[in-house]
Each structure stands twice: as structure tokens, then as C-alpha cells.
Image (cartoon, rainbow, N blue to C red; front, side):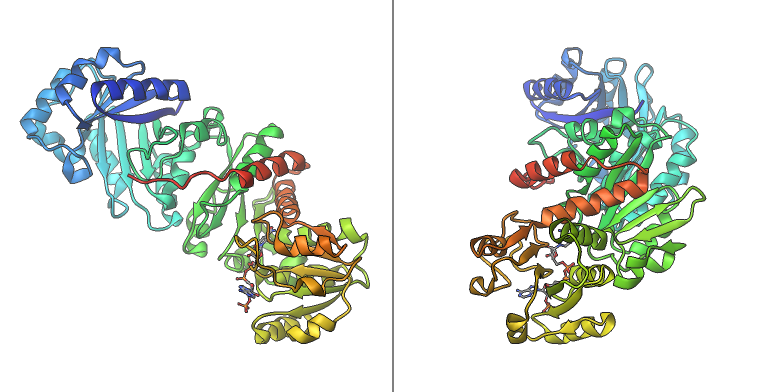
Length: 491
Ligand code: NAP
């Protein structure tokens, strides 16, 4: 079982209090960061009073630690802790010079790189095993989630207890997948605490949202790629859907710079992906097959594998747009749809509406982009003035106007027509100025969150073959939008 470790430091009283909080949160072990303690000798004397087993670390400054004493002093503290801490962590680089090993505590040999991937990690781990490590631990810093391929391979080839951590946002998934990959332990932080290294998840998040306790090498891996990706609601709703469907599967965020490199490095162990900005075109050519709306829209937001392992691509944004509109107007055949915007979402709106038989016109701040979209799709490009005069049945906002700006609308309030349908793809805020103005003008409205949930449900159904629990997904998304988490503070 992969154990959850929380780092504690400060005075003796603070370490004991943090250990109690870690135990209540569900952690298994605390890492006592003696190098960040006020009185190193006092905390080691207090080891018997800790509520959880202790992994004792006195991190050397050459590997990111705060130890300011001599090696002789460090050695004396290690010796005092031997047999009283469950395990003692010593850097491989300093181990032979110390010329000592614990007789009763487990030996964790470690290697840290805060600027890169730490060199030949297989060789480093082999050196740790040769030196007699009970647990080999490497913590490195990727510059793209593609580097997670190296971490996964390290676990796949492991010959003994291993902890391989990719630090920072690009490596976040390595902490969440520790149980699937068979790590000896994974680090997490307490609520309100920055954690001991960049990118640690909350203990509650690991146990609750990601279900680490249930993971094994059979757990299926899904995720979302984007850049940035930290704000994504998708891990929240997809993990809840998997749990509600009783599936042994996990969904994690991957912050990806180069999508093609990520797919090459990690595509073999990932069963399905959501794809968000800026990667919606990047993987299309790498698929064995794509659904027709991908070809029509030139964008893909979903990947999965069939039973033979073939990679298939879909555009569930376009499907969700079709579904949201058809639930409101019954059929799109012959309806006149005016699309505001000419970016990725607008292209999906145009192709989805046309595929369902609608007559589509596009208007955009940069008129040349509207003309280009019209040329590729057969829609009509309208200037702003012409759009105001065009007799639409449905108005859809595909621009970013209104996002995070509750007073801004891409359409004049006075230009709304009673009886028309107004669909805003923006869902932050949930009730945009556009929708408020439309309701005041007696229009029927569709909120962007309906599209977000519908596209996620269509993804879930492709990955699992089961109906997604949409009401649950919607409730969780609404709760999150009402109370967004505080930004993560890094140490
Ligand atoms: P995009 O490709 O960057 O396109 C942005 C569009 O917004 C362009 O047409 C751009 O016009 C226009 N725009 C931006 N700022 C503007 C302004 N101040 N005034 C007028 N037009 C402006 O982005 P996208 O991927 O299409 O996403 C657009 C929006 O869709 C997002 O902001 C998001 O809220 C929403 N969305 C919703 C969902 C959902 O599930 N509900 C999913 C994805 C996206 P120019 O061409 O002139 O720059």
C-alpha cells in the first residue's frame, strides 16, 4: 500500500500538533524535517510522543534543505534517532562520506534536483540499492508533463521499494498516480499549509477526490491536458463520476507544453484524455480514427482507446453544443443561428449547427477571422452592423467576452428579440450580462455550464461505455464555481 506522508517542522509543540492534524486528515506517516526545526535535539528527544510513525530528514542545503550545522552534528542527530524513527532519509550524495547507516531504522536514500530531471535516474536508483537502501527516493523537476514518462518507466522497472516524485505543477500527476504506480509513499500537505516541496496535493484531495487508498496497478488512468490546467473543473467532476459508476479509474490533470511529445512519452499508459486550450488541434494527426465532427471542426477535445488499443478522437464540445441547442429548440434544421466569435469554440458551434441542418452566420471583432471561418465552413460572415439586422432564431456567444467580467456583453441589450434563444458558452460567471439582458428581453437562455457538463458526460460515456451521472457532475461544478479554492501557496 502506498502510504501518505505529511512533512512537519517548527518547535516541538508545533511538530506534535501538525502530526495530530495529519493523523486526523488520514496521513500514515510524518516526515520530521529536523533541518526546519527550532531545536533539533529537542524534537528528536520527543520522537516517542509523535502520534504517527516518523520519517526523519535533516536535509542538506545542497539538496534544498535548511540544515546549517556540520556533518558531525547531523550524524549525531541521526544516531540519536536510530530505532526511534521508523525511517531515516539520507542523501545518496552524502551517504558514503557520513560512513554510517542506521542499525534499526529503515534507510531511505534520496536524490533531489530542483532544476531538472536529475540525470540518469535508473543509475541513481541502482546506486541506492547497491548502497543498501530500504527505499530509494528521487525527487526531480520536469519542465513538461511529457517527463512523467521517465517516472512511469522507473516504477515499471523497479526492483524494490521506490518513491519517484516529479515536483511542481508539471509533475503534479506523479503524486496522484503514486498508488497506481506502486510508490512506497507519496507526500501531501494539510489544508492551509504550503507543503514541504512544490506541487503537493492536500491529504483530503488524495484520499477523497483521487481515491488513492483504492488504487492498484489495475487502476485505469485518464486525465486532462492543457496549459494552464490547474483551474480545470474536469478532475473534480470526472473522478466523482468514476466513483459513482463504481469504476477503478482515476482522472488527473497534466500541465502539458508539447502535446505531441506528451502523447509519445505517456500515451501508452493513459486510456483516455480530455484536451483543453491550447492543444485542441495538436493530437488529431496522431489518432487512428476520428469522429466526423473532429474533421468538420478541425478540433478535438477527447481521446480514448478501443479494445484493440486504437486511439480515437472526438469533439464532444461540438456534440454538447448540438445537444444544448436541440434540448431547447427541438430541431436545428432550418433554424438561423448567429454566432458571435471566430475562435475554437465558435468553429465548433458553426460545424455542430451546420451538421444538424441549421443556417449559420458568423460575426467577429476581427472580421477577417469571421470571413476565414465562413470560407472553411460555408457559413456567412457578417459585419457587426449586418449582424444586428440579421433575423436569427438563436444567438450563440463563442467569444470570451463576459468571462470574469459580469458587466460586459458581446451583444447590445437593446438588440435582443423576444422569443429568440440566447446561448452563452461562457460560464464564469454562471449568469452573464448577455444572459441577464436576454432574460429581460423575454428570450429563452442556455448557460455555458450546461455545455461544459454535456461535453464531459459525452467523454465519460466514450471512456466507460456507461451513462455519466450528470446531475452529480453539475452539482459539484456549481459548488466549486460558488466557492473556488484559494490559490496554492508554494514554499
Ligand atoms: P479563442 O479561440 O481564443 O477565441 C476567442 C474569441 O473571442 C475570438 O473570436 C475573439 O475575437 C473573441 N474575443 C476575445 N476578446 C474579445 C473582446 N474583448 N471583444 C470581442 N471579441 C473578443 O477562444 P475559444 O477557445 O473559442 O473560447 C472562447 C470562449 O468559449 C471562452 O472564453 C470560454 O468562456 C468559452 N468556452 C466554453 C466552454 C464550455 O464548455 N461552456 C468550453 C470552452 C470554451 P478576435 O478573433 O477578434 O480575437
